[in-house]
Length: 109
Ligand code: SF4
Image (cartoon, rainbow, N blue to C red; front, side):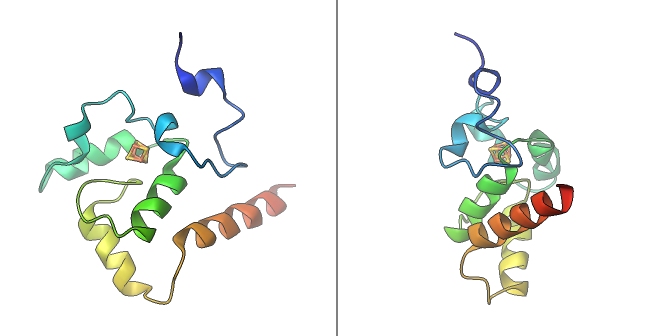
């Protein structure tokens, strides 16, 4: 049995919102503690998220559920808190990211 992301490449990516995103994340085979580090180590941990095919889903989930600890969607807890503080009007980050994805798709077509 091979890598699940390469088995189902059409499920993930820019055109589809992936509900079961965790199984497609680039961190799926990493040490579970790798994204729950402190201080400067978080900047290194964020590198795991670069190019992750489900980064929007992961970040939306973390933002909508106010995940307090760890790196999610390429942002540290401090960065997510700052974003929540800057945009208290946003009730659903998933909706924001979904709309952005749709706009991006229509620009591209
Ligand atoms: S964005 Fe980062 S934390 Fe989220 S699934 Fe991808 S690699 Fe894991």
